[in-house]
Image (cartoon, rainbow, N blue to C red; front, side, top):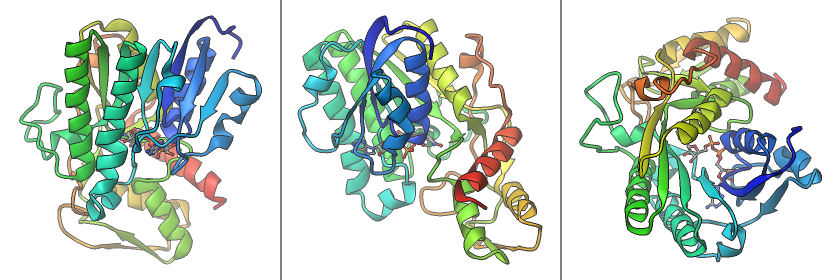
Length: 320
Ligand SMILES: NC(=O)c1ccc[n+]([C@@H]2O[C@H](COP(=O)([O-])OP(=O)(O)OC[C@H]3O[C@@H](n4cnc5c(N)ncnc54)[C@H](O)[C@@H]3O)[C@@H](O)[C@H]2O)c1
């Protein structure tokens, strides 16, 4: 955090979230004044206090799902990083309005505020779930048709479409990042926080949703942020789409065994069965990352190491 603020201010939505916090610190380190918009539904403002106290960040408590006037926060900014979203896919399946409001409508509100205030660069945290159940592995950015299986995935795909429409209609440029599973400190959702919370409640039993054969790639959060920033720096299309992940999968069974081992090995692992862990679960995920690799980005940690680091970080946070 030694660089003086000399670059245009940036807006980060969801900047109090797990990925947002790391991104915000990287942008502040690079000399940007950061304006965070967050409704704190899953984020924590304490994570940003250091930058607030240094006067390098302003916090704007706004809900993007409502039609609040975002323009005062956007005016004069060079770009907007849109990370705010409902992080819980199952919740969106139970109540479809959640992803409509916090996903699709939030994106529309962000783009409209950007258009009206002449903020020309939009960077968006999308997801591998836009691919639905792909038949090609590793799945390239050009894969189609894109048929997501959850409300969350639908809202990500709708957001991507809105970005493309705004960029082509209004002289803006867009970056769309389709993330694998991103892990790191402060994560509230996903298989690792889920297992840790369960084993804390009952040290003798660990319930695994599905047959445990689901296998996905895991990317450590600092690698994710470095990848997004490299892609922005090195790509100049009107709309730039990048997968971000690692080249290895870790089966859910394996994660369950690691969590059990970390707690002395006595918990019995029980599988609920079925290929999908829950409606909307994508059991096999492996993204082709050759496009981002061709720009010189390399993840520092492979999937297996990222999983181990996330288990250690989650245990420390839960005090277990
Ligand atoms: N973590 C992953 O594995 C993963 C994978 C794919 C995509 N993503 C995407 O990356 C982004 C960040 O995810 P994360 O893991 O940091 O989740 P997170 O829950 O930690 O962060 C989301 C942030 O958005 C805020 N937010 C939610 N709804 C809002 C609203 N209506 N108005 C204002 N703020 C709102 C929350 O308070 C939170 O701070 C999300 O868009 C998510 O969909 C994450």
